[in-house]
Image (cartoon, rainbow, N blue to C red; front, side):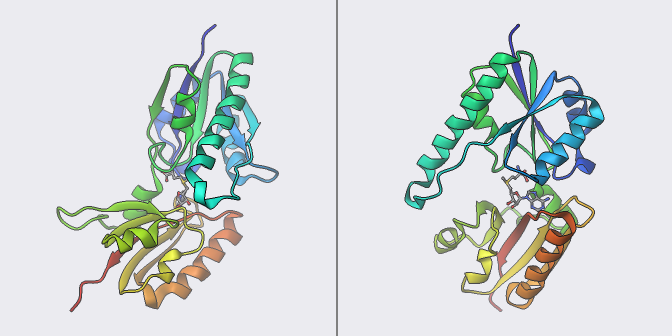
Amino acid sequence: MSSRVRIIGIGCHPRQITEEALSAIAGCDYVIAADKGPDDPLLALRRAVCADLAVPLVAVPDPPRDRDDPADYDGAVLDWHDARAAAYSTVIDERPGTVGFLVWGDPAFYDSTIRVVTRLGVPYDVLPGVSALSLLAARHRIVLHEVGRPVLVTTGRRLADEVAAGHDNLVVMLDGRLQAATLGGDWDIWWGANLGSPHEELVAGRLADVTDEVVAARRRAKDADGWVMDTYLLRRRASR
Ligand SMILES: C[S@@+](CC[C@H](N)C(=O)[O-])C[C@H]1O[C@@H](n2cnc3c(N)ncnc32)[C@H](O)[C@@H]1O
């Protein structure tokens, strides 16, 4: 029996999973999920989705990622992708069939699943999910860019360099340290944590005025859900 893989975006909370995604998961023989250690809250959410649909979930211990040499960040990520692919191949060789990967948000944004699955050498398709980007914009009732203008989607790690390069309208993901607070200049921020969960938090305003509010809201989200992820839009204030 041959295998195929379905990479399924599940949104940022089981409340946001699409009908298309639900029916794709229900049609899988099993789902593979990375297990990042005891009490992994996102694994627990995936387990709950699979249990509701009576689809088995195979948890695969996530290979450690070498974080010792930040100078070779890209090399460390590639090695990690190879290690993940090897671990998933072992499972798929043992259990051929239709295999689902449940991707948080949308697989197109800051997620390695597509890159890892391409290494497996099996046919695959991708189903979109509701990204944190879409939720951020919707919850704040904003368009992420001004009329006919661009928005740069980046990470906390790259933020200072992107601003130095002249970007002044940016969505920032993967930033556990609110790197925006270290920037010079005058900025507006539209921030959201745990978007989609019942305990989501939102803050908007002039960055210098709301930094403390963001820090407090981030803590509340973590206490309420046991995990916290935040995303924000940062836009330079026009000089008056
Ligand atoms: C590995 S990336 C995954 C992004 C995901 N594929 C998406 O489409 O949103 C994780 C980052 O996404 C953002 N994120 C994910 N879920 C979020 C949520 N519920 N609320 C706010 N930001 C979230 C955070 O910036 C987090 O650091």
